Image (cartoon, rainbow, N blue to C red; front, side, top):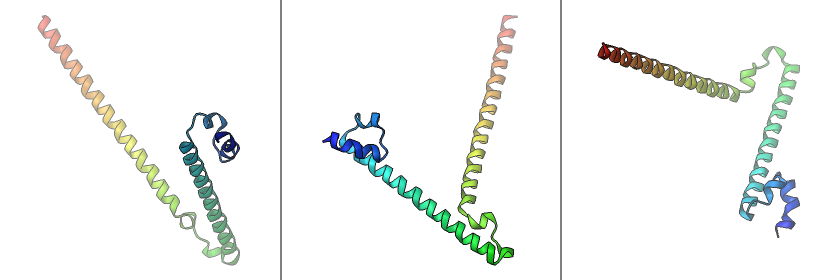
Length: 120
């Protein structure tokens, strides 16, 4: 049964080496996921093509009112905000790590000073 499914699975995007280690259910889930991913890519490409055509017509007929990039692709602002938020979160974690390191260094120095006083 799997031998009959092999060419179709490879055509659907499952690597030939992975296919033989997968169960039938895993193969079907992967095929559906690959199909969905492909449909989403086509949908996105169609959306961009359509937007590009609309902007080209808009630019030809009324170039003074041509929308700004952010207005033409408003979802990119959301992506930019998410990236900036992720960067700021990473910066916060980095600052917290540096603060923790400083606290540990200060504690280590205090311990060394205490040991020196005890040995005197």
